Image 1: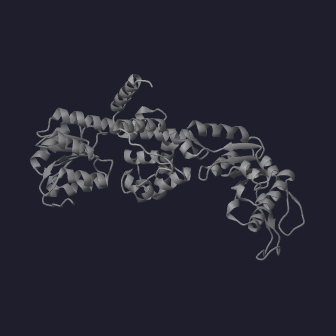
Image 2: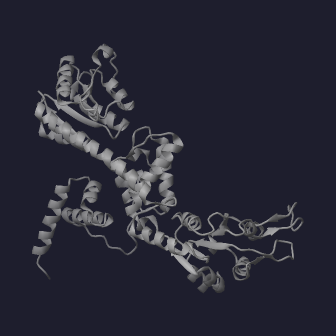
Image 3: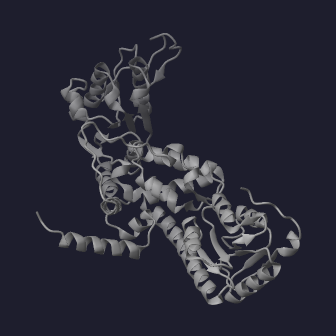
Length: 479
């Protein structure tokens, strides 16, 4: 049901009373009685909060769309609509807005239902000024704290950025330390990791802090071309060496002379191509396609693969001598699921990147959206996360990305069927809750504050549950 527009006296009803605090939240007062609007605005002015008053629900929704207000104090009963419908539409337009509902007939069940639907508070009429002040002060404190946290996150993001790579998890700090150690030495490096984990960024960072950083860095995706094209791309060719070779061209090895060549997905190359690459590594010599002339090249080789090259060697799909030449130093790049501690930083990094790209001012994600991203398995790793944030930034019309802005696959995760032979047995609800809470704690590395946020409960509730659970385990009879 849509909220009807009543434009009668809308200009007269809307008045702005500035608060005394520059950082105070601007509050919209919505009530069908102009006298009640005036009284609440006067109370808010005395409490130090700026306010806008209106008797028209549609006008309040427009102000939410325009980002003019962050809090709405709304009556629960209004002609043609009610506060619950207004609450649903307001949160649909901006999941980050705070709604406080007022009622002349306070019932505990109604208050619980309103809070569950997303209301910040549910207060009785006539409004108790002390209670309203307490609720607004807590809200303003939470709002200002979040602003400070966002500022600190931006500073942390700048501090934790390593040559275009964001990470603070122990797994990534080990990678950064290894990169610093090997970058200064002119030796071959093999990067191992899943697709989308950031191997090319690691390769670029190695080159950027190496002594040859001023020289060229050439990139070749070995899986994107057939052997004949790959050979021409890497080694070059002379005019007339094959159909379409209308001129003589140098390859990437000559192009990057004195610099570095990054061979991505080297595990996809054929055995004949591997033999030619081995000669480059051993003798630093190449021959253009169709030319007998041997040319000397001086390059650093960095290779990457998402395959297990030892297994490929054992299966006869990869040359053993080439593997050991490439594997002088190996750096394993962790998957995103192995570095979930980096997820908030990566989200901030991509938000900043795509805010600039799309001229947006998205401040962050709602708690619901954060919970969805934390629970996702990320098979596509950092590349998948970047695509998700890019798409959400492009489609979102609010200050915060909500679940509805995420791809459909994240909104409706696939149900996991039990594997063959697995016997499912029903468990008591308390046991299921206990197992779920402990799984969330594991995902959060024991961080109870973060776990409580993901579970959508208060910290004290989580502490109380864990204390009770520990007591039950201690008193449980042993077999």
